[in-house]
Picture: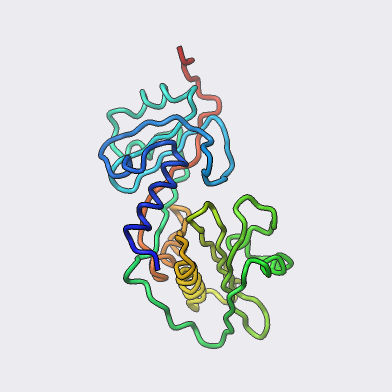
Length: 248
């Protein structure tokens, strides 16, 4: 199974590709400004411009921006605190990301009254006919971040909860989970995420869990399933219509 050292080295290496910096930059102090670039092996999230993303794992703050607006962004953020940078009026959408608590995470006792199943990649397409699990499934067999592994729960033969993993890059699989409304509050989401996480680790990949900063219930699921906060990512911009001085 992956240990904490290997996990963190792999995560920082991937974030460095995504945000065009060095893996060591996440362990430094202060602000680090980098130019946005569609680097090879980046996680294939949508590429929008003008682009500014702010990432911190608790020490440095990596500010990744399009070349034409980077001088303006640097001018606006230099001298600010981490909190001030993440609260600037031209950025929004702060999401916490979680990594499994290696060495402490363990199998949970699943809620009674349900049947549980692990679904391999070759059979996931069959689940796309079932609505209601948009956080867990891509519903697209040709998606750039394909569904690769699923845990699910059934009640009286009906699928009522799904946790799904998408292969976001060579080393990291992201987990999402959905439970149908009548079955929430029974611990299903926590159990499905925990089960899926341990299976991903057993296969040698790094599971990670992302959610919205306002989704407290989802964050509670992550913690109860064996995750700890790892980084925060401010990924949206209000730069459209902002008058930015041209690059000289």
